[in-house]
Length: 181
Image 1 (tube, rainbow, N blue to C red):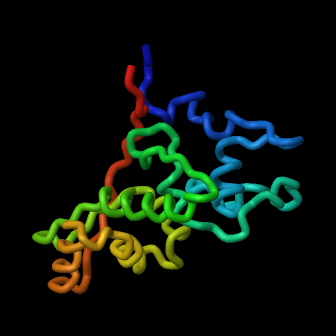
Image 2 (image 1 turned 90 degrees about the vertical axis):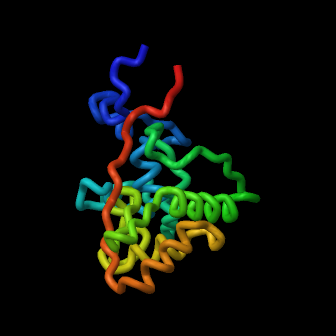
Image 3 (image 1 turned 180 degrees about the vertical axis):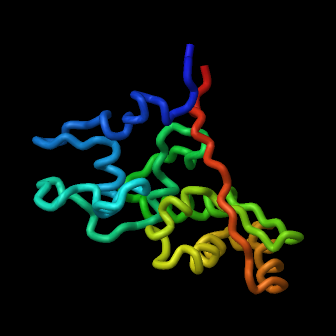
């Protein structure tokens, strides 16, 4: 029986910093892998300093250039996460492209009567991973990823043509564990 179904409470909120893999002679926590390696040593959204400090020998394993589409492929086990997919070297580019397109299309709502667009809170937390100035550019990023034949693309295009200033809101994130017992 699962007593607490909120993933934030696993190991008293330290699940991502305590759970680790030993790779070669180094230990890498889940936070190390996400924020250090895959996000090119960027700070955790709740922190201001780079993930690995100067002189940390694990820095050499960081990607050189952040690909923000990783946010649509990573899954921490919460219901608000993108679906899990299997990636290989052969399908990585196409897989990330499809994951990004599906997430932006499926996790966006358009409210024409309110001149409003609601997008995933991931885009708030990691806004600067996607664009330089999230307050002004995140709408264009998200809308550029919509499937061209999807209804959300049509609704967005109509809203943009009728309203030069679209309001953006961020949906609540569902931290409930994504498990079936």
